[in-house]
Length: 342
Image (cartoon, rainbow, N blue to C red; front, side, top):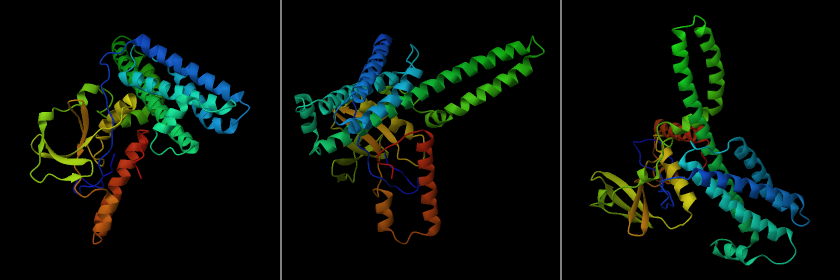
């Protein structure tokens, strides 16, 4: 994700993203099993840490996060009306819990690490020792928890809106027959307003994007992309034309983390609703390879642009600051966090 100070100035660097194909249909039973399994693994982790004789304080970094997340899950169990993103988030959360459970078992028991944990450590390019692996695991756990809680908030918000809509219709009909319907409506509206205040951050994030997210909608036709007359390549990013007019940045996806990839696509799609963040065009499939397509930003990120253009007026700088503040406010109100937000 990249912040843009104004639409008049092209800034930011292209985002890295991973994506893969997800089943178009959801089995409600599978979703419920994922939720139950996640809670069971989480409780087992908390129990292991409480009874641990070795490395108890280190393990608490993980168990305290998991304990809080479990409360949110138990308070908002999935239903047959839950969205596809709830299923994706549960799968991602369960996957990271399985890894965390194995890691904690190895930490608290005497002896060496299991082959599974050692293979995981070796697979991390930057993981030179257990400290880095521990930090990486916590980072991925936090991301999975945040994704799940955000989706639960969206799901709850949609249900609240449906209830409010039905309630308004029912009160309208009652008003035609009962003289006290107006007073009843006012009281109910006060209660509904309190509920709306709690879920307001989710409404701000959704706008018209993200609430009806469908994975298939984020893919673009490869024929809509073509070489630009002044084609430019910046490392792994290639400049191309989208729909014969829009300059875009095209970058090959390298990772295989399926749930995380779909989540990144959904967040980028949702962030496109904010005019101060570069827009996400979609994903392109080319054979077995997948590419992410985003808005092209001619002058890289804002910091580099400001360093190379020292004569910018104060009026323009204030415009930049206003745009950045608007973008950050949007992210925070929507409860969206990203490592590229600086």
